[in-house]
Figure 1 (cartoon, rainbow, N blue to C red):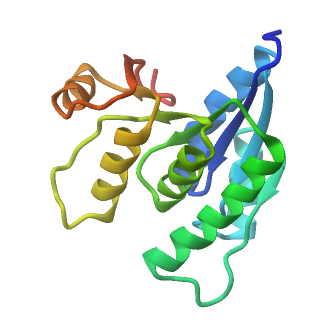
Figure 2: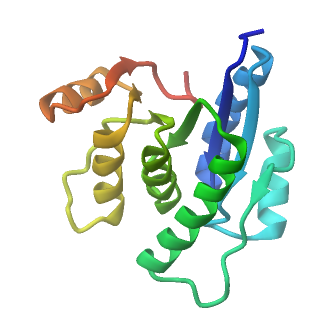
Figure 3: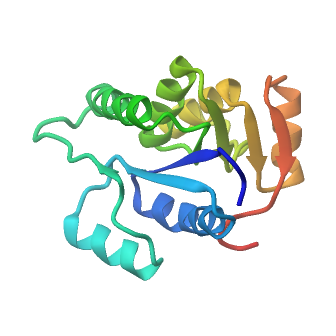
Length: 178
């Protein structure tokens, strides 16, 4: 058991649930106290339950349900950020793991950074270079405020180094494929 380490894993989209399940199970296997936070970004109770069951994840410690009408990127991100911050303040993890480029991960990254919690970005360094995509904004901002950047490929590490990110970069592969 790793003494006195507490981790939080953030999920919110269907792909994120699948990708982060591997990390969640590894943390638990290493006997690291782990909190699962679900933003409900792609909310469907039936689909969420099925995917969580398929990847053998427990019910999340925190599961937010977006209010009706909370659909714009700003409203959605703000709602998630407020609730993630509350969960992080209550749990006080040493590290928060986010994965990818969805609004869930951007909201979690900003809340985490403001609280001074170590931020780890899984799938760091991916780039489309298409500024019309909200996901491109999110992934770049997350990378630039992360402490630990876990890139799936050497090319992604090169992207991060070329952008002079402050965090430490590691080429770790893809959580699902590798």
